[in-house]
Image (tube, rainbow, N blue to C red; front, side, top):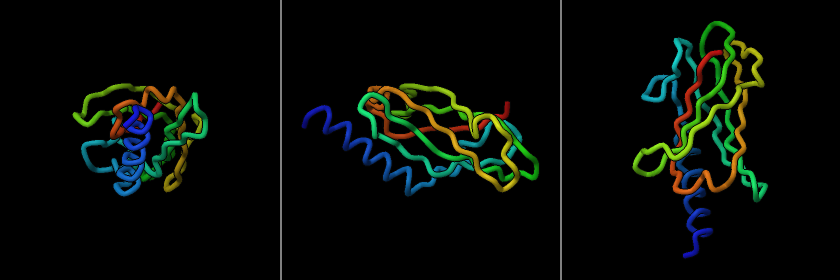
Length: 126
């Protein structure tokens, strides 16, 4: 297999796993780093451009107050090692009302996805 085929196969598997799991971080090991209740939803990998792929998703506010902040995204390999990490604003920095979800996007070079099998995404207030 070529490296490109292996990358494509790995990303396809990753998308399938993320879609089936839903990445609910509201009450498990991936809880938010603040006291607010949030849920990570709809994580997707967008590969429309050959020089910039994107990790996109949503943060749902499950608290009773407005929140605003960003997410810390860790790209993990099969051993759980962090191969890349970054931050992205949620809802362009605007508040998210209770029950509402806000989106986030992070674009990067496709090489950053090498050996990535999972993501750890945590919301934090700003």
